[in-house]
Length: 155
Image 1 (cartoon, helix red, strand yellow):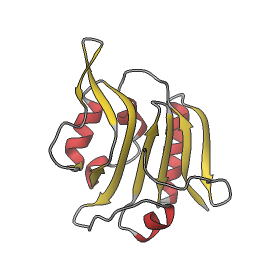
Image 2 (cartoon, one colour):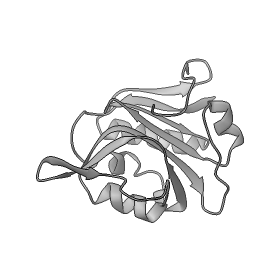
Image 3 (cartoon, helix red, strand yellow):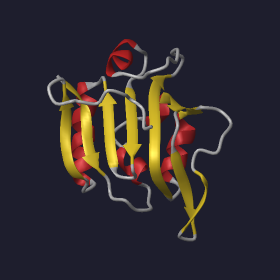
């Protein structure tokens, strides 16, 4: 069974997360923002934190606006999507993910190494095709057989 995808994004400024997540209706979810290091880019310089809000949860429309209308640089990111109105839970492992209300886990490590876990098999296919279209490298499906990740966090 496909768990999700893994690939490498270019290590550069841009709107890469907004482009990558195009096949997903970002606004249909509430997003739990875990530990990370991501910055807005202003005048080709790193500026304030990308996720500069006091809460660890951001409404989907606000996240969509943030990712599609700003230039930024991602070093580490940990985003988890929950359907609106569903309870949040702490997710550390793939097994935790499976029994939770979380529908999608998005992780970026060292600016390039990206992993997406998704419960919706058709969404995995759309994300895979979109990653190809975006020109990302080393794109591969994560399956029960090849997924060696032990923790679903960016740190």
